[in-house]
Length: 542
Image (cartoon, rainbow, N blue to C red):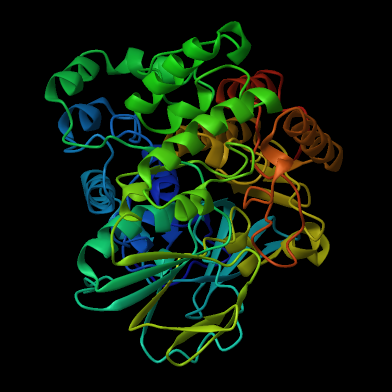
C-alpha cells in the first residue's frame, strides 16, 4: 500500500481509517488495517509509540500482568522471537517491545507523532468523519477507531496554590524522559495508588527524606518479581496457542498458569483458609484476589481475605501506628489491587514518613512544599501520584460531534453510554477500543485490545460485503447494555467504594461503574453472538 505522504486527506479521497493513539491498541488496529489493504493514519500526541508506557516513566513503573501474557498473540513469529527478561516487565522493556512491533510491521510511516486530535465531526451529507489536529491539518475518513487508552489523561487535583511550588514537580503519568535524580533531596509524594506504590521503594532508597501523603490506603500484593525462568518461557513457547486459549477462558484474560480454587472461603476452616491465602500470597500478583470464588461477591468472605492482607501489613511494618494507617478498611478489590516490590517494607526506613490526609486534606501547595493540618512540609521535589481521569478523560478532551451536531460530552453528560463498549449511538462508524462498557481495565489489556480490534475489522469486512456506508448502535441497545452492566456490577462488591472505576477521583465526573464486570469470556461470547446474528443492536445504512 502506498504511504500517505501529503499532510492532509481530501474529502474526495478519504482514508478508510483514522486511528487516534499509538499505544498497543493503535498499533494493532493499524497493523490489521494495513494487512487488509485499508488506508489508515494514526494520530499520536506523543513523540513515539507506546501509549501509557511512553508517558509513565516514573521509577519502578512496570506491568501487573506477567510478561508472557502481557503481549500480542496475533503473530506467531513475534511470540517466538521476542524474549522478556523479567517475570513482570518494567516500563523500559515494554516500551522497547512496542517499538519493536512498530518497526517489525513497518507501522511508523503511517503514524503522525506530536499530533493532537483536536476535533472530530461526522459529516452527514457524505458519511465521512472530518478530523482536525491542533496543528491545523485536516483528515477525512470513513471510520474512526479511538485507541486513546484507559489511563492516558492525568488527573491533577486543583490544590490551592498548585503552581506556586518553586522546586521540581512531576506527575507520575507525565514523567520526564530524562532521569530524575533524588540523591540528597527532600521528596514529597501525594497519593498511594499503583504508581506511588511502585515508585516509593526506589525513591526512598536514594533520597534524603521521603514524606508520603495518603488519603486512602490501598491493598498491595507482592509481585515476587525477578529474572524470568527460561525453562518456563520455553515450555510456554512450545505450546503458546494452548496457553493463550486457556487464558482467554479466565475471568480477566490471564492467570491460567496460577493454581485455581473454585470453592468458597467457607468450605475450609480457618487453618485451611490461611494456608490457601498464604499459597496465593507466595505466588504473588493479582491472582490473590481470586484465592476463593466468593471474595468478589460475598462481603463476609471478602473481609476474611482483607484481614489476611491487613495482618501481612501489620507483620511487615514495625511501627504499629504506621501499620494501621496503611491498612485499608474498604472492600478488597473495589479499588484496583496493586502489585509491589518491598512497598510495606519501605516504611521501616528511617528516612520515610507517612502522613494521613484523610481527615485533614491538603490545605494548599506553597512555594516550599505544602500545608496540611496546619503543618508546613518543605521539599526540594514534589510528586503528584494522583492518578487519571480514567477511561473517558481523553475522549472527552476531543471535540467529537456526531449526528445533528451532538457532542460526545453532551451524550455522556450523565455518564458514558456505549453498546458493547465498542460503539455509541449517534456516532456512526465510530469505534472505541477498551472503553467504558468493555472488560477494559478489569482484564489483560492486550487480550482485550486484540479481541476489540478483531471484532471491528470483521465488522468492516461485513460492511464491505454488504456495500453499506455506515453502522451505528441503536439507543435502545446502548441503554440496555448499560443497564445490564450495572446489574452485573450490583451483584459484586466493586461499586462499594469510591474508585476511579466509578470516576470518583475526578470532581464533577458522573458516578457510573464504567468497566464491564461480567468477565472476559462472557463478553467475548456476547460479541461473537452479535456478529453471528447479523449485528442486532446496530443499524446499517447505504
